[in-house]
Amino acid sequence: MSDFDSNIDHGTAGQRVMRGIAWLDEFGAEHGLDLDLVDLASLDMRAPHGCVLGQAAGGGRGYWDVLRGMYGPDEYYGEAAETWATRHGFTRSDQDRVYWLSPSWEDLDAAWIAMIDTRRGNPGRVRDDEDE
Image (tube, rainbow, N blue to C red; front, side):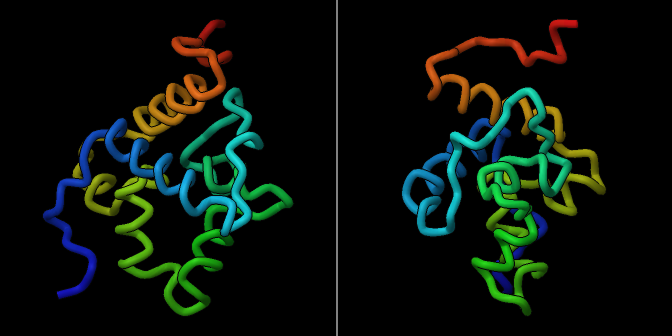
């Protein structure tokens, strides 16, 4: 059986993002990732350069560049990479998208914003574009 199982529940947005934060704390620097580079006002988990991994990578690198660096050129678009990224709140799985399962992209955006904001000492701040 592969690392990917379409019947696995990867958890809520908050649970996924907590795994992602823990991974970034432990391994982010090793992969050239810095959460301080993430601009919460423009965070968009749908966008390869606007998502957490894309922004944290900086230097014009994006989501796919980070996965390619971790999994290599032959595996970065495979099931293992998708499962890892889904479990850590960096994307939604095919199952999430096809069956309209939770969390939504907006749920992931909100969970990342809340977690990073809390780390920056701004708990409960509302995203700038929601104030309008």
